[in-house]
Image (tube, rainbow, N blue to C red; front, side, top):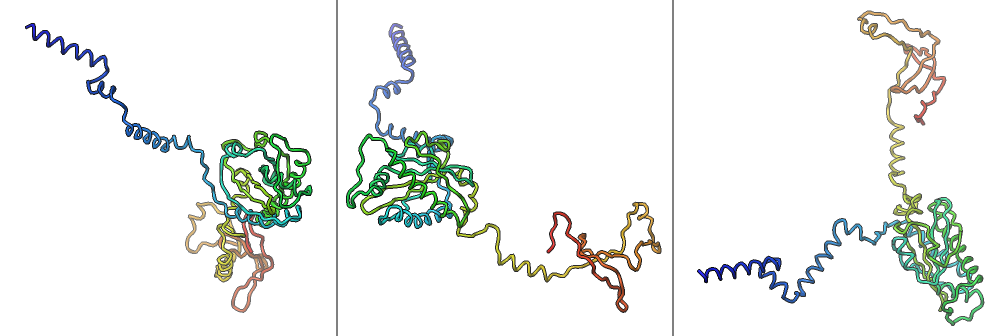
Length: 350
């Protein structure tokens, strides 16, 4: 009996210990064992997979897919050629301009990515009633200043760290920006007329906000080289700015018109003109009660108000086309057309 009581007491103590430790002896052993590196890797991979799926992928997504606008790429290709001549005349230097890339980004992310110091010009697209940005990096700023103020060729433009831009530097870059905006309007001219007007220049990206941080923008980067000097210019155009001409920019080639085929239209017009239609000569019209119509029988007489010189209308279906007077040619009745009737309001007849 004593041995059995001792065994029961040991089992009770073991059960109390397992309950206090929160599980079976295996759990306690697992808790005291060193962590498995592969288990940690699997856990991290599972968390990453969950973060990329479902609603978390939408919430955490910072990428903006670039909606390809073929005509917008054509516009900046034209700008590249037009601007090469303009900047060459502006600086009296050999100029090489290349379109680096076209990307899409959220406006807030772009402002945070601007390398300072830089000059950010805000411009307005008057016909579209919205704005855009032109960012000139520091290398381009000092290269333009050096070229326009007579710097020697073959020397790299240098800048003084920590020094703000002077009034002369800002004035020269403003002249360059106005030149670029004029050429940008010329590049858009074959697609749609638009005037880009310089509004202001900022050096702090926070003061150049023209859209909400989450709004998507198209970013074009141009590289301008003037012998051994040069820099980059970026165009930032929010999708909201391009919305009024989005259908035009979606064209696959210049002059494309969605939903129209001029060859088919001309063929259809020729075939319609050769179509045979029935014309009805209406001598007179009466309004009758339904019981009077129901009472008509074979042999009933309907008196008409038409006389020999009465005017008669010719109708095609329910549309009155012509009006004239009734007459006779040989054994046949004839109508001499005297007037071409106007089409009904909202209708069309060629």
